[in-house]
Length: 394
Image (cartoon, rainbow, N blue to C red; front, side, top):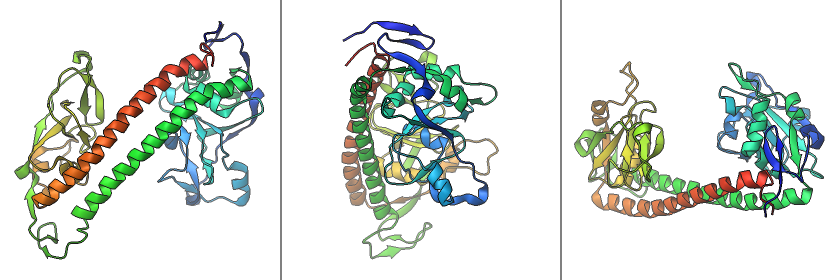
């Protein structure tokens, strides 16, 4: 059901919604902790700005830094479930004011000094509603209005308090977010499943081709002890690295063929450079990066793509562990001659075929999940501006 809209300085919202200063629904606003180097490395895990980007719903993450805190510091600064976090400064204009929400219930977390913590009054404000509001173009426009963009973009807590935010009824807030919560919960489940599948393939590769689990007979090689009957060759003897071709954004035609550069997929095109699945290796920029395309693709001139008779999944995993950086070169880039000179372990064909079979089946599930993620994300992004403005009522 559509509703009448009112004009605000950040866009159109429902006429039935009040506009109030953000501080009226806050219980507290707090800057993060600064600790000197001697207190970093152990203790309580820290949410940094890098943990926010790509992870708008904050949980405990692998590789988080830690602060050594006193009991009083932890009591004062420990994050609570449903706290909103806003990045305070950024080298990128739109990076300042990036909003995330804490969803960790079990592991103590604190925030670094470049993040602002906002605790809302849950009697009148649903934290998830305001999280999604600040994910929408309306919320981002509001943040832009207080972004003090100079050489480093930034927002202040005092300015954040004063921005005018919409206040639907608590029942309407809950109704609106139900749609998003279901989608995001499903997205997280699928992403977690993909993470487990990826780890499973990596574990199999390590067990079979690094640790040689179950092997009892070995022989010497330039790589050390390897299973008997296996061999070591130069990459150039069994793999060809083909140059990608220039394809600027202006010359791309709308299509569904992924275009790969050294940083991964950089766009789409209507024609392919390779008509079958393959491996892409970064040549310039992100040197030595490795990507696997399960379908036809186009590689641009910052990358190579692979031609080989070996198991594609074996080469992909092997390349992830190769040192392609040429330390002797003054110009960053991956030399084909340098890559060709590196050794590669060649297992028996029966082992390679078995690994390819297992990995291919896992990859099919991964690709299906990735397509579902794209569909769900598109649905979410289509609904977000309409529901967060009150244009469509639920």
